[in-house]
Amino acid sequence: DPVEQVNRLTASNYEFKNVNPYEVFQIDIDASDEDINHRYRKLSAKVHPDKLIGIENAREAFEQVKKAYAKLKDPEQRKTIILNIEQVRQDVAKERKR
Image 1: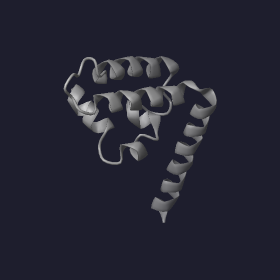
Image 2: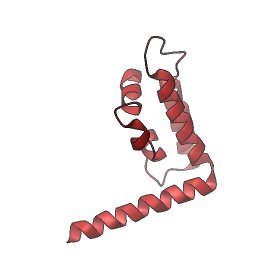
Image 3: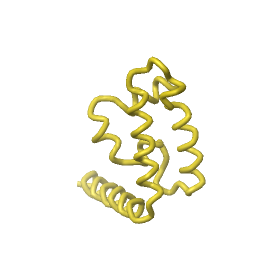
Image 4: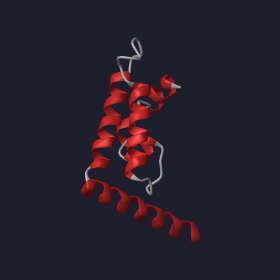
């Protein structure tokens, strides 16, 4: 639902939550370029402010989608993001073993 997506992307502390572009697109880090492009087209169409006239945060949700897409299209940023996510997953796994 477009309104649910807008609310998810602009929930409290959304700037912090949307640091991870994979979370914005709700895909895993092993997603291909094709998967990312497909999800971008689908999500940006859902939250586009011209389609959601009267929805207060539609413009900001659309900006968050564009920002996440830009991060994933830049190979260096994408590599850094994946490395950070993998490091955090390893740290959490170690912490759970204790």
